[in-house]
Amino acid sequence: MTIRETLTFIHGRLKFGRRPGLTRMEAILDKVGHPEKKLSIIHIAGTNGKGSTVAFLRSLLMAAGLRVGTFTSPYIESFNERMSIDKVPITDEKLVEYVEKYQPLVQELDEDEELAGITEFELITAMAFSYFYDEKVDVAIIEVGLGGLYDSTNVVEPVLTGITTIGYDHQDILGESLPEIAQQKAGIIKDGIPLVTGNIAEEALSVIKKVVHEKNAVIYRYRVDYYAKPVASHNFWGETFAYKTSVKKFADLKISMLGAHQVENAAVALKLAEVYLLIKGKSLKEIKIRQALGNTFWPARMEMISKQPLIILDGAHNEHAIERLVENLQKKFADKKIYVLFSALQTKDVKAMLWQLKSLSNVEIYLTIFNYPKAVKLKDISDLQIKGVKIATLWAKWLKDIFLKMKENEILLITGSLYFVSQVRRFIKNSK
Image (tube, rainbow, N blue to C red; front, side, top):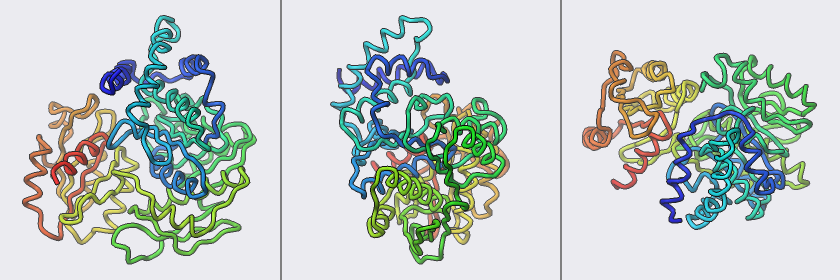
């Protein structure tokens, strides 16, 4: 198989959509000897912040001398980055090798009415487990795809779990209320396995605590068992924060990612690293912690892709993420005019997200469309438009025009769906 044929086969499974349940996963993993049961796994769920938390955690565990596999979604630059080892994406050759291994197994299951229809996400999840096992990683950090309880990744037997945030997203699948969504995320909690939680509202956290109690697990809560507080800094880009637990205290940790939410993500990752290394009888010196956090990068999350003009990319793909984005813009750029180019998926409350962006007094918002099956369509634009929001039908042409129009102290923000932001990111990088 060529890499093109490989990706065509993988994406061809997209036609089965999302099909909650673990029966198909168990069946295909049974055929390859359950590699997931032979891995040391940290399992991460949450509405937002999973990707950045995984990135910080990976850096910290690598600094401790561990070989670290990461399974994340979606990808920004190439499909291969979804399964990486020590920050290096799987090679095309290896990806072909694993598809050639799994293709006949998938076809075999397709002949069984009860097991037919392995989805794209199920397939690549299973492949990632095999890849990490074959490559003998010391630890695999596995990011949940959707929810937790019925997510394809929830076949794992983790050493440690984490839940970053709980917000409104995928309500059609996870439930309409925060407690209902929290119940789904809490599905990754396992008997006796420690859990680290991020900045989670009490109405959702109370559900998680109930499950923790039922599972006889230990919970480490943000602002209860560990604390993080942003501190004033003269950094042009990034954040400085204080961090403490009952036994540790750091006054001025620095990260190169922007936003108070990234401070929270870094703190969750640091607590996860502490707990994991304690379980494994290892430790990490302060200088290594500082270097690991400071060097962590995660694309399309308040990413400065150009300094002149100042262009920021942020995959704020749901209301919860847009809320944090607005907070960051108010704090950092209240004195500057911001041009916003926005697009999203049909499954999101696009109007609500636009209204949140409109709460900023210094923005000029443009709604656009992009090439993706579930993206908002041109026929939807008029229904989604609200007063003061303009239309940019062809975003690539609009970008070229705005580059000529922007003044020195103005900012361009590209936000919304990560699929959209990744397409714009490639366009800007190739235009330089």
